[in-house]
Length: 260
Image (cartoon, rainbow, N blue to C red; front, side, top):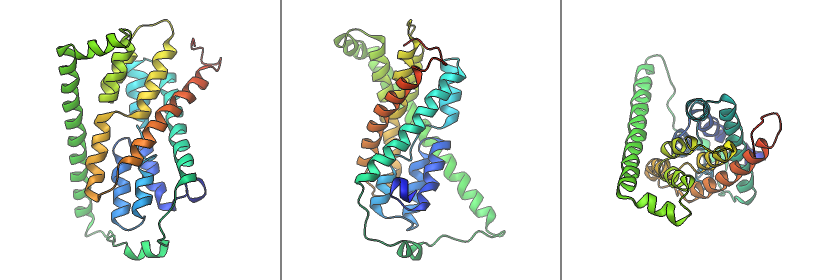
């Protein structure tokens, strides 16, 4: 982690968990190691830029198989999503300036409890309660932003904005995805066009950006530790652009047979 991302080795923990578990696990784990004194505030804010990603179950299972009906599309989106995230970490790591706090000081500040057989029940109970709270939070944000999207559709405002940009179904899908990721991906994947690669590229962009709903989920997590969300926003914009570019390159490979 240090030579590639310019951060301490403990940052591999939120990076890997954020990659395989999806939102907002990466942010929660970053906050956890920051709270335990294993990284500085600047390092935690920097890690937010690239440790929060969609999980493989969502990208391959939900987007690839359920929405597009193709495991191949899901794997392509997963590959480019991971590559874009790593690229963001490497690029921002070149400009990242660390605090003047040594690793020794971080370890001294660490006050984690040692898990014993007698405390195992308490630890598992706290973990389960924390997981349930996270699931309820995610579900709540999805419902709230789904209602907002429904209001925009029923009021005609979403169609009005689409007309301004050429009355494109893709415009409606992009706006929906920027507001709430899953709804937007579902709209884009169901648009029938001759070149399915267009749908895939837009989905790659939306997966990289993640949407306002997830952004507020992350904000609700990091605000407890008074961490800035600006690096996260910058990282997601970069990841959306890079994921689209990487997907465009991959789709040009003749082995996939997609019609660009």
